[in-house]
Image (cartoon, rainbow, N blue to C red):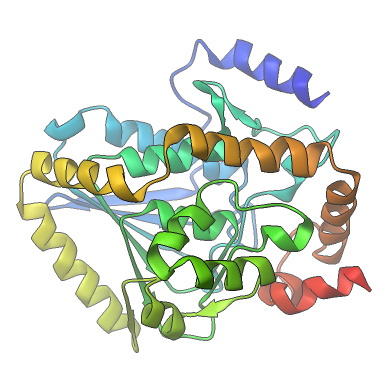
Length: 307
């Protein structure tokens, strides 16, 4: 049934350059800087579901259109949700038999999963990308952060970052572990990923998971605003060229990235009875990904599904 849905989606979407729009992404532009506020009103936890994913895909495609001729030189992402930057992807899409709006694979890049393609395309943008973090970002939420060029966080108990996929029998399939191993070293990456534990903003800044941490929201936004405006002064060709060189040595090769993603989609989840069982337990424990104790404190709550 999942395969049928993907094929049907491909047949319909091949004639359209854009996905449906749901208004979950608000943008404003000034002096070469685009501010993007993520606000998934269909989800209490700013879930990266079809609504937000489609809107982001449309935005990224729009930013890519003019290449280095674009008037936008910097993109700053933030969240309107006080508790979550992005909680994670919609777990339902990995459950056998589920039929939703979002396909597993990207109709325009069929060898990539939909979210894998989205995050890869973010790294491909000619613009500098900055994430402002004031809430939780786990699994695909953290992988979104990894796809951005820079990350700045608020020192707040609301900020919790993690790759929680191993806690349900999966692996970070959109580059999370690969990028982190370059940022915080191999040993620390194993420590945090295999235990599926959170890291707070201050510790994240100390070890390089995020660039910097700020004690107040005003200080955070003031710094990012000044940084973005400074970068935006310079030619986009120079920004894009610098990104290309850094990506060449810090981003996983495309084929490795794709294989890692397909491992989690096919081998560990769709074809795994244990993975399916764990996902269904999580959906039940979270009341289908609603705000509550589990989503707010995933690392401590998830162990309960093993008891």
